[in-house]
Length: 431
Image 1 (spheres, rainbow, N blue to C red):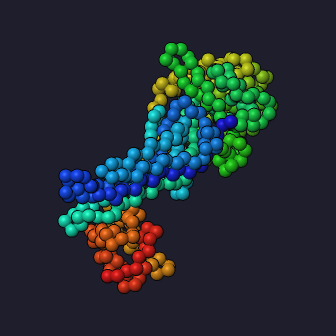
Image 2 (image 1 turned 90 degrees about the horizontal axis):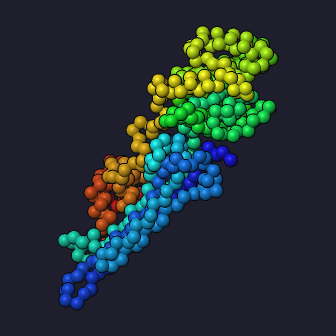
């Protein structure tokens, strides 16, 4: 079963909490705080695996979770970091954030990796909070919560040559003749329900990959027929072979109209395909009248921009002209410049998650009258603090002063008694 589009939930592990401990040793009169740090949570990482072909495994495992870091211990013992979780995907998989559609990465190189959910950092033990005024802090940080998100995984096959055309043009039969692939071949529309890949070998170090794509019909780019689900795979191919059924009993005018239908569907899906090298292959030349019909179609195609030498007459069933077609594929692949097939992340965004760091504090007011204080570093500090002792509140006040929280609130018009929300925690504002 070929699966080329799935949605997966990923959730990184949280960090372990820091430890509150004090050193007590014989002969050491002033041991002091000795709480160790918690271990980091496991991240979720997407890895491009050249041995995978579809995304079917994700239908049986729709969620990936990283492990939690172990808690810190006394004597400054650091908790064990959790192992990262690897999500292996086929080459050509596009990874998007399901919420906003942003491209996080395009897995076109074997072994490529991107972090899609970063594990939470472990909390610091109480030994980190010793200063001139606080000699014996009795608090530590809890571990940071791991990131989570929904991902849309979309596979776009990586092939050198793509076979396109109307249903029953003979694409699947041609693939069986030029490679070891065995797609289903039958005399009825939409025989091919999923793309098939075949490797063509013309000699030592002369091979390329050909993809048989399901038949297209008019309106495919809008969702008509079966081919609309697989148009995305066309954009990955370097050369397009447009196969037409020249043995049909249709008038030449209808044959030309069918040819233009496929050309228009490709342009509607991706305007860049109009510049992609294209070969016109007239199939079923062993049938009566096929030569005359293909000659008229070739004349029309040359007027529309296809080179005459890129028009090849074949019979996939009899095998005539197939070697000439393969040589033409190889020639174009060897002489043409490969198009850029990678989908880059949005401008200004990174293929991996945005690095952590101190961000400028912003204050906005919601419809309920609360003042929402936003800032990556500030929200991280609040989420990692225990708020059950005076020691913690003093440390929190120090961080607020350092980040300019009170100044930002004053500028926003906050007054005594107003509700201040930072992350998911509400505070009462006291200037």
